[in-house]
Each structure stands twice: as C-alpha cells, then as structure tokens.
Length: 341
Image (tube, rainbow, N blue to C red; front, side, top):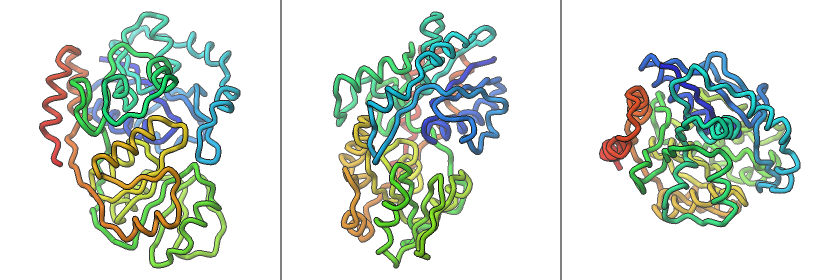
C-alpha cells in the first residue's frame, strides 16, 4: 500500500502529529510520500521520520504582536505560485491520500476528483462542537482552506462519531514534577516581552523555547532553540507549561499531568475555541493577554489534569491499511473507551 500524506507545517503541532503517524504507518509496512507546506524548507528540524519529503511555500498566517494580521496574510500570499503548485500535484500510483489541513494537495485533490481523508484538529470544527466561538470567516476557512471529502476530527472529547482522541508522541523521559521548573513556549511574543514577563520570578527556573537566543542577565531564564528531544526532556521534569492555545502541546501536557497557562492568538478562532474549552473543563487557566499578575497567580496554583490517551496512531494506521472507511464510528467508539481521565 502506498499513500500520499500532506501536512500543514506552519506550526510544530501538525509536524509532531505527523511524526507519530509516520512511525505507526511504518509498522504496517505502508509506503508514504510526505508533502509539507507553510514554512521555508530551511526552518524544518528533526525531520528524519519523513525520508525525502517535499516542501512547498503554501499558505501561512502572518502573526504580529501575538495577533494574526489578516491584511498581511493576504498580501503575503503568492496565489500564482500556489496555483502552480496545485497543478503540479500528481496522485497517480497512490492508493490513498491523507491531508492534515494542507491546502495545496487538498485543492489539487478536489480539482482532480481524488478522494481525500482529512486527519486533523481542524477537521473537528466541521462537526457540531460545543464551546466554539464561531463567525462566518472562521467557518469559511475551516471548510475551504483545505477542503477534504472525509473529515476525521481530533479533539479532547468525543463530540461526534468522526472525532478521535489526540495523536501525540509519548514522552519517553521519567515524568517528574519539580515545582520550580517551568517550560515556556510563546513564540509569537518578542524576546523582550517574554523576559519582562518572567524576570521578577527569580525563585523559578524558566526554560524558554524560541527561534533565537537573546542576550540577558537573568540566570533563571534559559533560552533554547527548538529541539524535540530537549523540549520533551524539559516538559517531563517541569511542573507547568506556559504556551499559546494550540492543540498538540496542551494534549501532551494533559498526558503527563502538567498544569497549563495558555494565551490564544488574537483573531485565531481555533485557538480561542481551544482556550475556552480547556477553561470549561477546568483543565487549564487561559488569559486573553498574559500578565505578570496572571503568571504569579498561576504559579501559586495547583490546577492540573492528567488524561492518558490511547495509542491512536497505531489504531489509525491499522484502520488505514484495511481500507474500510465505513467503520470509522466503531473505531472512534473503541478509542474513546480507552481514554483514562
């Protein structure tokens, strides 16, 4: 069996999920060709799982001051190149096409009338999900940014028979809870803003992951370039994580029982929905704009939740190999029964 698997690579969460799926598909002896889009090829890291993958510029949101700029996003979009890339996709020789919110291959499949399976967190928003703050543009983007035929949503609750639990990597490190150790991943904040938020809390050690390492004079602030291995080691031993309201990292934090302080990107309705849902379940504390006071209150709290997710990747790889897409509700039900809250 040979499949084409396309992944939105703007953030690290989609790629992290793809790594887990890559290993599961290899166990089933399924041959996979990978396509990624949404970031320059030079910025990829830890891509050994994908052999000779292809990368396209694709479409990506422009973020400024921790807020999505719709205007800059539209100006930055190279629609002529996007059209050329769509026309270049060839589905010949593949038994199946899987898409994780990647627009180039999704539109190529739609135009060529090739059946597509969507496997993503975004696909969950195509179903009736509670606690979601919706608007017309959000619904439009979920349906048409990367259109697919069979959307398989990934979320924290079984809101529909076509929604499955998170697909995340298991942290192979010893899981501890050192109260003074905190992981910080807020890449859309400037380095200066991050330092100003954290510099006063000298009784804690903050492990901050971002693309640059700014100079500073605070020994309790340690900056790291992003590395999956280093990141997993730090999250395993910390007591809490400060991050944006994506999906993959909160899922990993819940898996190992770390408390969360999240700040959704402004204008990013998916993250706003995630933050709202985490609050509704009392699984995290979320703030529209994190302040020093919010951080102090959160550091003094003991609000955390541990949820053990099943091995969804292996189950999905086995399901993909059968080729029977009609029994997805049965698989969903089986997986949710294995969730250990």
